[in-house]
Length: 334
Image (cartoon, rainbow, N blue to C red; front, side):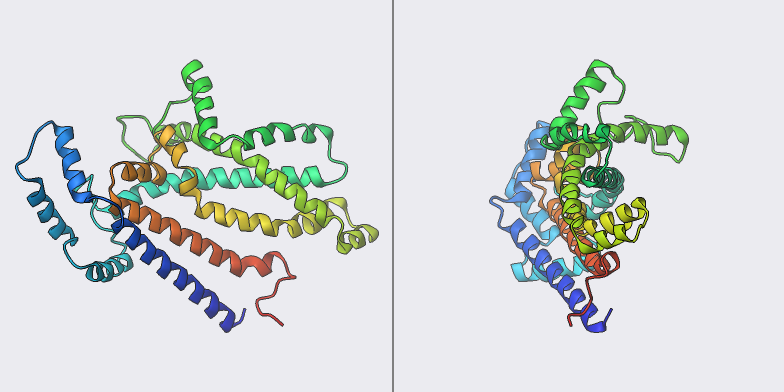
């Protein structure tokens, strides 16, 4: 890896982050209405009371939050806060800090979506590779229609079907949440069991809706790879079929799938918002839905920025790993 190549990629990463932060800052301030007044009116309506002058209270809150400054001063202050991982104060859950809300929800999303995505990717890749390889048993091919059917169904619809059958009808799994309601999170076996049981259904809905698409894409890539000269040469040399399948077939077909995986991991929060909402799972998707509903634009800003940066970092890391996966790719053009 040359220094020039690495510097170009780092520069591109910084440019993407700069644009993402700028657009994220501007979009929130182009939203119609006054978010502070909306939050105060909502709190007053929920409490069933009344206040004397909402505008004066809103003005005091805007001054405290720095929203009474000019846009340029807010923009510069926003950059300073981003470098300090400080995304402001929640308008709905005042005086909670946005960073605390995000960091509390982030482990739940990483645990759920990370594990579910890796499982669906691994199973789908192996299934698709088996489907594209000659001599695959018929019972494996019989799984294709099932997974293609589930791939055509959105996450949240599969989640609703699972809730009906294994929650409402048979009561095998809990209906929602991240752990047993009213209990405390502790480092003991009952807590681990509770967290696992609450994560099974949302994870299963993501896995069932993703395996088919991974398998279909991998099958097409492997079929095209089987026609390459190096596959024919490996077969002519009498190499073991398992080695040809894994090392020459699957490995050289993985590149487009890994690109899709990196993008999917970056978009995991946005893709599973409705899954977390349906199961009331305390992850970033659920918090984002709450923030959008409550017009809590500081929380929306923070979560969207985390999403944008995660996509940029995932693509940056994948760009550096490409040549390790496929030796035909070089870091430097010749």
